[in-house]
Image (cartoon, rainbow, N blue to C red; front, side, top):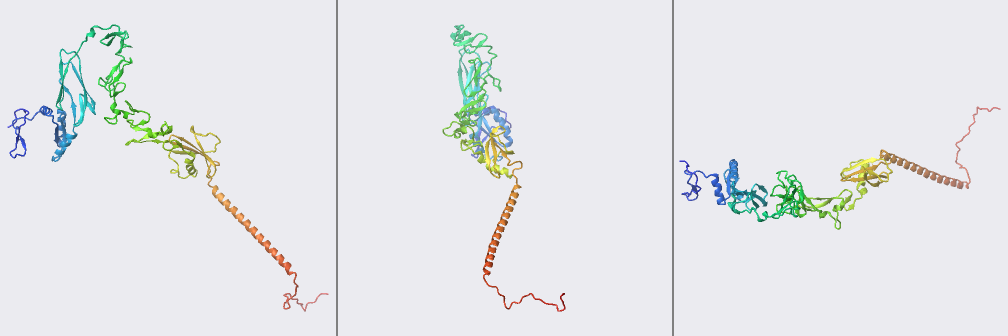
Length: 501
């Protein structure tokens, strides 16, 4: 057969003959329950429906949940072996929408507004979305009349997803006895209007709580929210004030801005945190921190950048920078100062001495010179006060190779060095080194030669004196010839030679 009867909402389950499970026995007679029947039953029994389906069917059940608004759709594995885990996780972490409904009919002069005021991260019309099961959301419900009631009436407010409702009895008082006795041209109304039941009714051309503002009240409008176009962003966020005659917005608690268009929640580090951590005030552009605090939510205490006994941050020359997680602040000092609070000045001549010596020798100075250091060689100058690009300089002296001056100027995080060339263009003269060495060698050679000559001369003089002394001593002895001595000189006469007469 086939189902021909509409579902009556009754449970038609029968225990299986095996006794270990139940089965539905109305499938051949009764149609499936409608979505509205499922929704009503879930609300009445305060049941959270969890539709655990495979991935291919997920889109269908997401649409179903959005229609009945009382359930959660989740995905299980193909063999359903994780169904219990998925259901338990969905129940504990499931988030849904809390939406108010009311029983106001078309002919009833009621206007109902619902505004979540606490613990709602996703406000929606008449409720709050993304609410977890264990959270508590506070709503403010306002019921106003658009016209007077003939008799007491009621408004029923309900939250279908929770199965709860509230009945509110409403009565109206549309006329007071004081309305029949107005005070004409009252002084309280600056004589520009009549005082009726404590309120000023202004004459044409005047407005304000005490009719103290002149002009067209329809022209001098309060600032409007650029997104909604509503003055003061609507009654829920602010109201228009006449006190200053300029029509300024009086914002409700938790809202700021000229049109009450900004929420103070944007200035909180977390939902329950203080606005700007209690160390500043909130603006539409974020937190404006009090002196001594910084950070997105003024959570960083810059007191660690102030030296004990001083009122200035980083001695007035450094920048206090704060990190996150945790928020720790410390001074970022310029290159002209040092120490924790930038209170000690740096000897720039000492800092850049090695750098200048390296630059003069024209070698790789990347590791010797501090970062962001520029240099330029200049001619010797005679100015007492020397500036670099309009900045005053520190004058230093170096005696490497020769005595010369260099000038140090610091601006922001960069340093410029101007180094005098000594004695003139082409400094330093590297060819002078071998010339000097050669000259020294020649000088030493000449000195050695002179010394040797002097030593030889002195030695010869001593030996000559010894010889002269010896000769004088030899003259005291008689000279005789050796009898065995034969003179090498012999004289022979040619017998044939006849001397001419």
